[in-house]
Amino acid sequence: MIRKFDLAVVGGSFAGLACARTAALRGLKVAVIDAKKEPGARVRTTGIVVKEASDDFDLPARLMRKVRGVRLYAPDDRALDLHAPGYFFQATDTAGVLRWMADEAARAGAELMYGARFEHGLEHARGVALSSLGLHADFLVGADGARSRVAECFGLSRNKHFLTGMEIECEELKGFDPRFLHCFADSAIAPGYIAWVVPGVGVTQIGVAATKPARPDLGLFLRRLKTFCDLREIKTEERRSGLIPTGGTLSNLGTRRVMLVGDAAGMVSPVTGGGIHTALAFGRRAAQLVSEHLDGLGPHPVRALAKEAPRYRAKLLMRRALDLALPNALINALWMAAPVRSLAQRLYFHARPGDAASFEDWNETFERGEAKPSVKLHLI
Ligand SMILES: Cc1cc2nc3c(=O)[nH]c(=O)nc-3n(C[C@H](O)[C@H](O)[C@H](O)COP(=O)(O)OP(=O)(O)OC[C@H]3O[C@@H](n4cnc5c(N)ncnc54)[C@H](O)[C@@H]3O)c2cc1C
Image 1 (tube, rainbow, N blue to C red):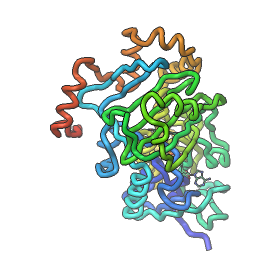
Image 2: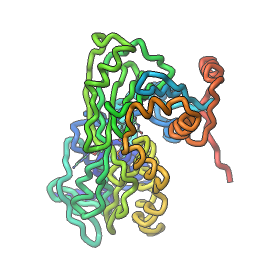
Image 3: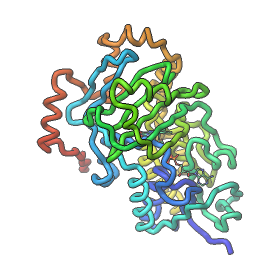
Image 4: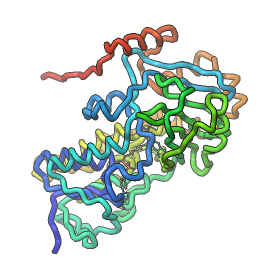
């Protein structure tokens, strides 16, 4: 028997679960199909979210830890401390966040089908038949990540440019100031990107990424860390790897009845590789557009989403420059120059000003518990 849904979402991660929850709250009958055996299994991300994402999506504080600044190291280990008073990133218990999001989507009424792989679908005038999964949907959202099978199946644009990322998660390490996200510029280890140490939620995450086809060298990075900690202290609990699209939002995001979102749509910052906030925001937006369209109220969702999606024009140019992977000697020579500091400040904190003297002031405000997340209210 074929079961009928208004919306099928392929991918039960950030974009798919945000989409499913909103669509279900809006009254659609929603199915989420994910190949993983359960939500939060086989996490592939470091899971750092920007402050705006944790504010906008009310992610549970118990699953996050605030990181107040970025300590950026040159190849010769000289460090720049960057921060923007009042601003922080959130390290997350990512598997926990995804489990919480899945519970929220189910509570809103979405049906979650983990352990089910999308292989093929047949689009027709009134919807999409997913015969091998025994279901039919009026609309299908592909939130199935960087190598989207939905994009392939329906002849949509596909990501072509990537960073390859690798990470280990280990028992908490001392030796890294937990107030900072520790980032290492090093073209031998991470050509085109950086390596990182994140004092996370009850764990330490150590990772590295490089522009594909170059491979990031996690082994070399671990050896470099011996000036910070005793390598024997590193007790690996999990290993992960994955691709990060860097080519920007794709041009052909959908058909009459199918639409891509999140990494599947290339909605990832080509410079930082951050895609969780956009996956959440545009996953939710996709649901709003689809529900309005199915109610006969709104424009076609693909047209509307393509207009609203980030284009990343300046970041794509910057990505080309980063892909050149400057030699380490040159990075060392330029390190303390003022333009390098202001570029790094811009990359991590956008237009927010930094102030070299005031990290300790900002940190004290934070420690006193006076740095509450600010929520902007838009009243008409
Ligand atoms: C190593 C690494 C570190 C990163 N660190 C950060 C970070 O710190 N902060 C940040 O903002 N971003 C980070 N990113 C990027 C971020 O992880 C992604 O942008 C984000 O996960 C995108 O969410 P998504 O829901 O679009 O896709 P994904 O999280 O990739 O989820 C896709 C889902 O689709 C499912 N799926 C795939 N194919 C099928 C199929 N055929 N059938 C059924 N299900 C399928 C998968 O099981 C998965 O659950 C990182 C990425 C990597 C690889």
